[in-house]
Length: 117
Image (cartoon, rainbow, N blue to C red):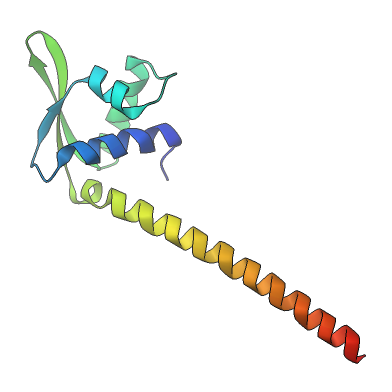
């Protein structure tokens, strides 16, 4: 399971791919698009390295006019990230609703049994 900041970075990287095989993105742009205020460039670099080593994408460091950029190629695990987060959210909501339903059913059965005996 990814942390909140890793998840935000991964959402930006998945959103930027737009069915491209690979693309370039600068760390500063990635930092701005992720929306995490308290994140520094060194922390971002560590997060990107960790996500790459986890197999979400292939990472190559490149140079564009003297500026460091990431060349990102999403793997199958990275391409399925957004779908898997939706499934996790859907399952969590389903379990919550199911739990509430069983609690209400248990309460009603308890009232019926109390009235009978």
